Length: 396
Image 1 (cartoon, rainbow, N blue to C red):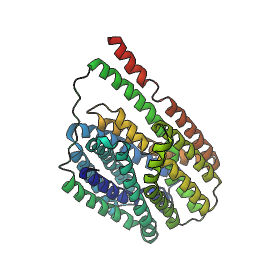
Image 2 (cartoon, one colour):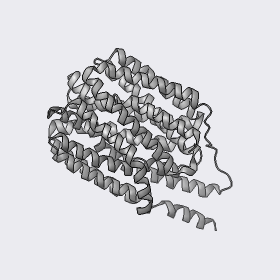
Image 3 (cartoon, rainbow, N blue to C red):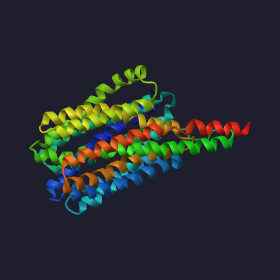
Image 4 (tube, helix red, strand yellow):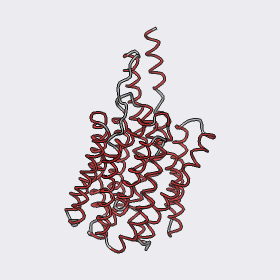
């Protein structure tokens, strides 16, 4: 891997360590510390994720216009402002204000990093995005392992630790990313009509892929919201809950390289990989629906981790392959905003369903959403080859 990609991998790990101090505990803090209902907690996280969606789109757009370095730097500075505020003012409603700003700043960073990584090592293919995914989960493992222990002592230190990690990320970005350049020039020498039709077909495929991604993230987000609160109700400590996320990250760091080699031998396409992964998601949520003790949640998390290793790195890989030249940032922005959209809808939807009905009803609905996601993946690329073939034949 090129040196530039290693710098991005290190930055991704540091970034995720910082954010992992906070995001798994948001619902617990709002519900238990600030005394708000699950529905209110879901609404707050919805606002945070909504700002993150806007940040994703802005970050992808700015990557194509001003480059990755300036985009990432802007996102870090905005995040630092909000996290510094949270360190000193984390009551109600200040918590909501700073959390929204933090969502926007963090949202700008991810599509720029993914697009930059794909551009600096194009021949790497899925290896590039797998590397960022593993780095991200290494950060999750380290951050969540520390968060539960720190939160049991003082929630205020959680905000301070997050701020310190972003300061380190800022130093890495300033010293390491300024010289990283990505080729986003429009390709030449191809018929413009064919390129235009292919671009429209690719964008159509991206939208369907994004819909499937959204449907997967709505259930996944329950682990840091309704499921997190439920673990507290049945007497599982914060440190044990955070341990689940530590195990999640550790399994990915250790297992993703082994899984990559196996998938290349067994599966013919990334599409098959995603479908199988969503099927494993369904199994994990069925196990979760039966869990009544820490061991049950641990088993569900282990299965969930296998599922996400199939799905999460595969989706941005497809998005990068679909992106026309000069639109890599925009396509990554769409995909990242879709994941954030799932995190935006999920907490509110889950909180309302649990408040009105029960956790059992929620699990049934989540499994149905996964089934719908499989249907979307089955058809997302149906028009791609047809559109290009018809365009070429029409010019013969």
